[in-house]
Image 1 (cartoon, rainbow, N blue to C red):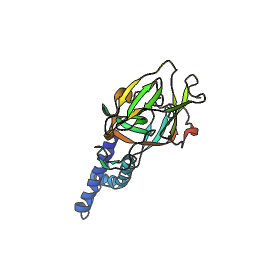
Image 2: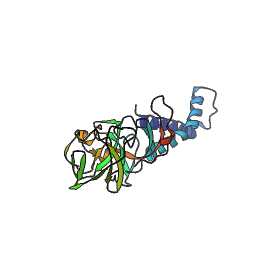
Image 3: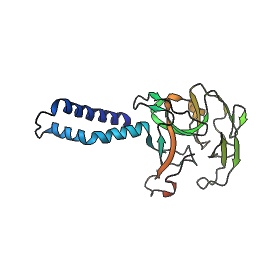
Image 4: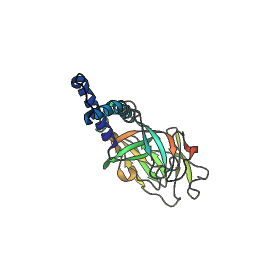
Length: 248
């Protein structure tokens, strides 16, 4: 279901009805009928729909984390806000960029549309910028010949049996987890094409990311993850401890 298309369509339809009423129907007496009911609903819902479209398309959009690929930074059931304007303003539905604002930086947590199926959104961490040369070996990253600093961290309360590390990329410090020292997936050498970005999940051995789907072209970026506004997994009570956390 393309929610953006539905919202834009409803906004456009109600707007056309209102405009037609202003230009042609205002001087005519209106009797109680289905058309009058439709007109009343159009006047009532148009400003609300327009506000939702503007906020969702250009400012913030809510997303729910469906998988554990970004643990421990993001957990299944986290509801997050994504800043849509971070990587430029795009027209809704057609996703055409109309204004550049800033470029993704290494370490950003970004939402993007899956190139093979743009109806699906993924969330990963930006590891490589256009032109970067990346090596991933034995859970360690090397970017353009420089090995990324990675230090062992305390035990992860959510994954007691999995090693946890603090990784530092361009002054961005974040936590990653791995399965064990003898198991590592997606190892290899990668070159990031122009106007594309290399993405990886923080759950390094349990993430379908650029190691498998390739670098993500800039046109598929949705925005930068900002904060957690709710956490609720299934029928559990909301975890208020996670509400308001900044995503880093």
